[in-house]
Amino acid sequence: MYLGHLDLDAPLVWTVDDALSPAECAAYEAKLRREERELAPIVGHDGQPAIDLAVRNNTRVMWDDEAEANALLAKVARSVPTTLSGRTLAGANPRLRLYRYEPGQRHGTHWDTVVELGDGVESALTLVFYLNDGFEGGETDFPELGKKIAPRTGRALLFQHRILHEATAVHAGTKHVLRTDVLYRARR
Image: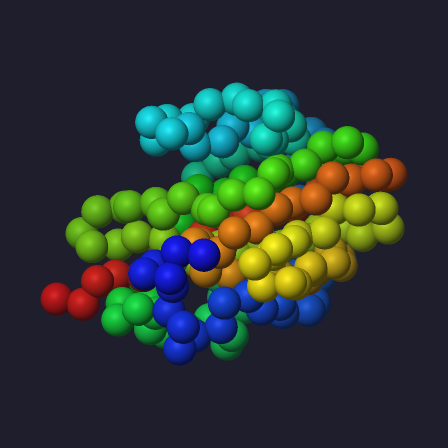
């Protein structure tokens, strides 16, 4: 963990069950099947996107929609800290990503990247919605915390960016996930 980048007065990892309805999950799964997918990159050591199949080999669909991202944040708003590390809640990252994991696909151990949007606004929390269950594997593992989160349809997973985690390999079936980030603004 990057202790200097964590707010230890706030939760590090938590879930909200039934944050999305089965119908909402099905609509996102349909979008994932309908849209053209690409290999999901990692952020390389130079800060640029890079494909590294040894670390990450799942596919994604990505788009920007501020209203949709904030509507998703509203689904879990009661469990999101209004302040984090002295910064105030500023909304959701408009960048939305749908991920598909087939058998053998995973995203190895990593920290999530802080996204800077300008004017003192940057991401600090990862917001993941599990769109399905009924597959084998695919847990989100937080090895430093000794905690694994099992996917469940409609479940939201939130965690501070700088916590080491892994999307473990799917062994059978297909896992679908929707992701964005929660933004905070530096106090002036």
